[in-house]
Amino acid sequence: MPTIDAVPEESIRPPRVVRDAETLRSNLADVRARIAAAAEGCGRDPSSVRLLPVSKTVHDDRIAWLADAGVDLVGENKVQEALGKADTFERLGLRWAMIGHLQTNKVRHVVGSAAEVHSVDNLRVAEALDRRLQDAGSGLDVFVQVNSSGEDSKFGLPPDEVEAFVTDLAPFTSLRIRGLMTLAVFSEDRDRVAACFERMRALQERLRQDVDADRFAELSMGMSGDFELAIEYGATTVRVGEGIFGPRHTGPDDYWPGVTAEQAKH
Image 1 (spheres, one colour):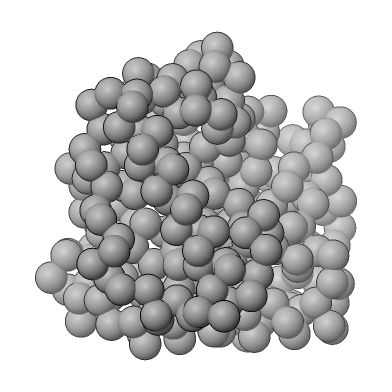
Image 2 (cartoon, rainbow, N blue to C red; image 1 turned 30 degrees about the vertical axis):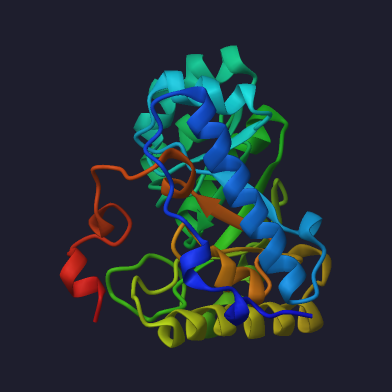
């Protein structure tokens, strides 16, 4: 069985800038093929890995092309941007997942709108979500965000605080914990990125054994630049934006506040 390391880098072409539906379909097919190859390369079933296209900064026409290609769930980093696209999502039959940092004062906009929240990392947000969900008589799939790199620029809980945090979430019965989420270090150093994913895999195994196997079955980790490596370490959801939509006019600061592209390399 081939490993991910055996895949030559030159065989992976960069995504083309999306200017039409055909290009988007081609990029999407490339990403799906790479997911399948990465899964098979480490002995996993490709169907065990879910692709979550990230539609951050993407305009309505491209979102429509994505829906036409059969996608039914997209990820958004900012509540305000997602709300601005709410009519488009509804018209296209798309659901959206909140994958960016969530503030307590934005919770009211998420409940009843988002299908999933991948960034629960404090009790104030959890309590606010639960209160509004209880009032609405509904529930919500959530992921606990973990700071696997230990960087001050990242949101998320330190790995050694996750188990206690999950215990504290027990009273919030409308929150359906599906697993863990992380952003690995933004680096060209494969070993540094892999170390983040390995911490997540070890944490997931510990929680599944000591707390609840079903509630920690999922790992949301890996983005356009590292999703194949994330799959090697057990990712079940990979969040891909540029790999599908092509280069954006954004930088790492959109994900890691205060971090420049040059700083992120070190």
